[in-house]
Image (cartoon, rainbow, N blue to C red; front, side, top):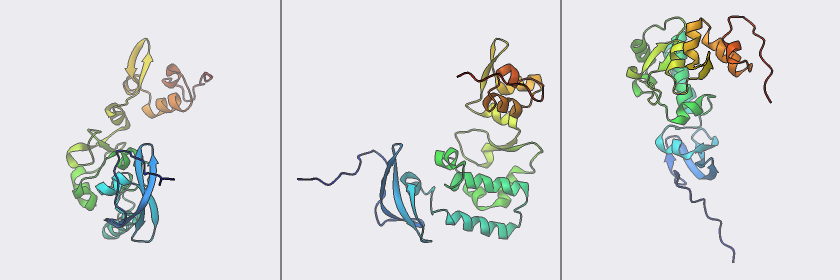
Length: 222
């Protein structure tokens, strides 16, 4: 006698078929991928989409993506500042935290990084809290374990941000293990240039830290 195939018994978030979650209605269980539970959902706009169940249940994902588009359109009409660099910073912050289609979503919204309600709903509030953006800086979270909120954000240079990361790159230079960002600052080499040479071109540490514009990288080891 055959038995119906049981649903995988993973200790993961499950939704209830037919239940509404903001603009989404759960249709059916879609499977487990990388030990995470996914469901097929129907959005009010008519789009069917497979989404991580935990994000639906927690409210991180509230639509198929149409809600974000509507929100940005409304705010753009209200402020008329789409070309303002700070507006783009603000919009980018929300996109990577709330839009699953964003290329950076897996490192921000997908990893639990959120935007506080007062900033998420009001660009003017974000602008007033952060103030003008100094040249050569971008938005940075002081504590990478927390979200975007007034007490945890600053305008910081690439060097400052690199030093603030938990996974700051260490290299061995002149017999000592040092942070790449620190030795770049000491030698007067642009951190972005050294990083590109080291990670993208396959240069040695010495070649990456060279003041030559186009150092000849060593042959990559097999």
